Image (cartoon, rainbow over the protein chains, first blue to last red):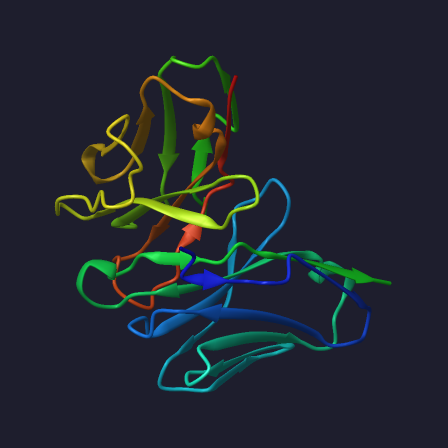
Length: 115
Length: 115
């Protein structure tokens, strides 16, 4: 059973527009959420995170929203640029017990930004 | 400074053979993680080393998988009697202390193909 789900395998967006990537999770015990970005033949790189005590975190063009009641996480990229084309993974981290430090990832969404 | 490195970058092996995958974490990082990404799947946690503590092996899929970390630095993931379902990208990550809400830095991965 998939604890973290990214239901859209791909997303195509025009340069300059907003990209919205979505993620749903099932386990409310996790209290820290992250987005990683991955280019082909490279490892994932950390992009942005949010703690469950917040509902929004912003870093430049990237904003992550957390809706705890809906168990839903989203990443907004605005304006989107062609260099943002990559695979985006959402992840959640347990910060207690046996889940401490371990990341649980979604399947990833391939974002393509067209010039 | 140097990031996380992994070797080999690609490995093709025959079913039933043993393979060893190597990870060199970022210097000074005490925590080291192994994940794997099978085709169409998200990253799946395998094992976690933190300092001198006993490793968290809860993600290893079978007893054919083992890992060690020598001298608190380099780690080797060994897969014995490989099966075709072991084909995946094996990713290593390290973090400074292994605490919660700490960025994990990933290597480029080893692409394993079992024929």
